[in-house]
Amino acid sequence: MNYFVSRHPGALEWMHRQVPGSAALEIAHLDTECALGSGDRVFGVLPLIWIAQIHRAGAEAWALEVELPPSLRGQELSAETLDALGARLVRYRVERGGEWVRLLL
Image (cartoon, rainbow, N blue to C red; front, side, top):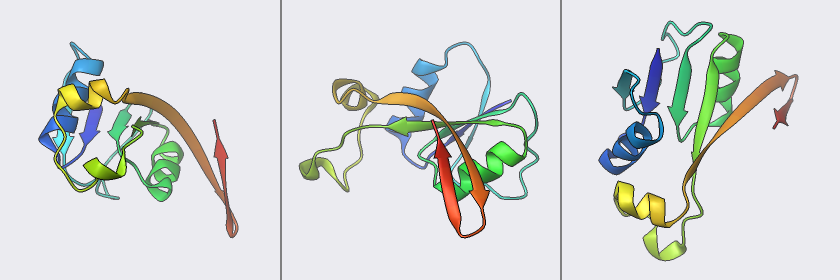
């Protein structure tokens, strides 16, 4: 199952374009009780703690990355604007270890 995590319509549309032909559950917030498992993929702007939880569940975490100029912060962005800014999906794996979090690229 694919999950698209965003409360922004432009980001959701953009993710659908990047992962075509696959069903996805659109959610505004990833519930920590969500039953993720092996083979599941979660796409969106994801905090590190969520990525670690996604990985522990055996699923994949794909972050929507975009270099956002200060002039566009706080604005709703269209899928076309995300394309123009060079948005991309990048797979991350995060392991939590004690007080440190290690990011594995």
